[in-house]
Image 1 (cartoon, rainbow, N blue to C red):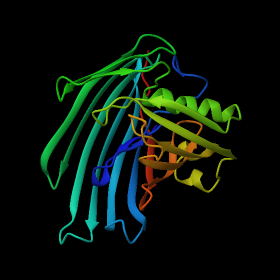
Image 2: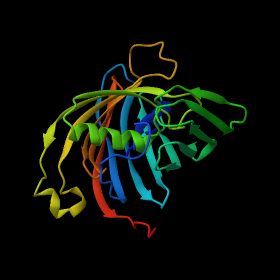
Image 3: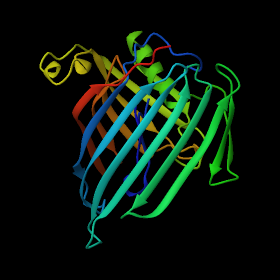
Amino acid sequence: MIERLLPAGRPVTLALLLCAGPAGAADIMPHQALYTMTLIRAGSDSGVTAAHGTMAYKWGETCGGWTIEQNYRLVMGYADSSSDVAITSNFVTWESKDGLQYRFNQNETRNDTGDEEIRGVARLEGPGQGGVAIFEKPAGKRFVLPPGTLFPSAHTILLIDRAKAGDTFIARQVFDGTTVSGAALVSTVIGPKIEPDAAAATQSPLVNHSGWRMRLAFFPADQQDETPDYELGMLLLDNGVSRDMVIDYGDYAIRAKLDDIEPAEKPRC
């Protein structure tokens, strides 16, 4: 699953990713992975001159839920600044396997100062029903979640299940708690199935799985704008591993390349 990158203050769901109700047929493999992030495109009007960093990502499992831990440090260079900006983020979540309960906590700093924390809980009243997101920090923020809203792990599992069924397009409201807002619309185009890559298997058996190229467009929570905030292209495998990602902001794009991956421990329930 894919959660969030936040270069230049513009959020991106990675883990973004990724049914109201229990997990489907997807056989998710808990794992921890390390990605290298690099700038692959920057338009002349973007103001971005460089970007590089690393991201550590873990999709874990408990007896009753899924956990996400994502830590990254991204250094951005800008044409109008003589010094780079280092963005450090820590994002931790827990999501019940029935897809109805969610806890989230994010901390972000820029150049190791200006700590910003977002923390809270969310719940849905039942499969396919709406619910509420309550922010503990900043305190007092509360959003109604519309019927059919998904949390990130349920969304990723749904994408895999729909890809297996041969679907090519799916749009859902997704709430991840990375910004102080409500659920956002995520529209996904699913490409043809890609068979296992024997060469990739030398890296880890976890990547020796079939998958699908997907393109996810993330629209603002208020849905007043027809243009997405950003798009995420990725190769999502049938076990929940993302082998390669490109975060496209339109005027510039960042690639997250999988460098290392290993299985995470499964619970004994």
